[in-house]
Image (cartoon, rainbow over all chains, first blue to last red; front, side, top):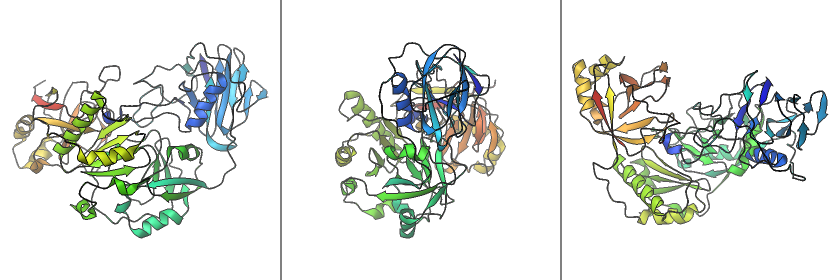
Length: 303
Length: 205
């Protein structure tokens, strides 16, 4: 078991999320910086699907009932076991009764804490992830909570590549245009490609929200609800694009101007409010082939 | 049918009617079960679209989809779920006024329709049910309620829905059921899945 000594600003249990249930209205959830989550697990000898703790800015502190190997990845942060500073991004032995403290992030926003055996919260629909949109999975951590750890992990990794988050610079996100980029004016598409936006304070596990020049719509009618994907860049009525992260709703009624490739989302998960964001629009592969059967009559869309 | 690319691994198929969405969703489900569809992570029907997400090579499927033979679904396709409903919702009188019928006519009209779950969204297990005639479409509340009790039956636009859990909401409430629509411990977790037929059965208690 682990006992939460200091929950931190927002600490949740995360794994690789819920899959195959979006048609029931269930968000995918899962670690926002998935490579960091996978790495933390590898470092302690867990399968990458084991549950870790995802912290937000201020870290967390937990007391371990039994000895375990732990590793902290993602946002770089000071890590201590009791009073002793220990390595970030490496397997660390924590004796029974000791407190593991992950401090405030130096760079980045979300740290991942893996424990050998994994956090053994009860799975819901195949995942132990906390889903903050729909309330599935374990609740966010509170001081005094106790969480079980699983048994038997493999040996800790001897060597792995541990990328260190770079100091704050512009977040640059590629964006594959569509499916609704033609709902926006040419000016809006130009703004999207050239303007700098700011990460808004209202960002959360559902979406990275931005502030900046509003994107103007060319089509003003209502969009019937349609399926949303991870990385989808939706433009709500205020015109400020938001990037859907793991807890995003499965359907939505605002147009998606483009989709950020999953490979770029780890950086989005680590961007702090106030950071500058740029988008690099790219056309989808063989986008000409994805026309309608009748030869791509765009007027048909305005039925 | 129009096939739109969504990022690098998904397709959004645009269709013209509820029936076309239902038919394509059924055909995708059939092909998936038969193993003749390339592996796909999520199939999400919605109001006028079906999303296929988690495709390795969406280009191939995008080219192939328009040539699919998609049979229309018979009216009695899909399971039928009966929902015992007390028609005593807080907005019953407003709905009656909007429909220009006496209050007790709302239940009769609503319970005479066979609905179909067109798609799910908003919350786990929340189905958007179609079947009510266009003339009974209801605008949402201007100010959503901060808490709508679980089991509340509501109307919004041309849809009927039942709140699986207590949540904020702006649908016009006409009644309530004790049926448990969502239980993650149950298989299936959601009672309303896309394609399911639904009838509301008036009860006194």
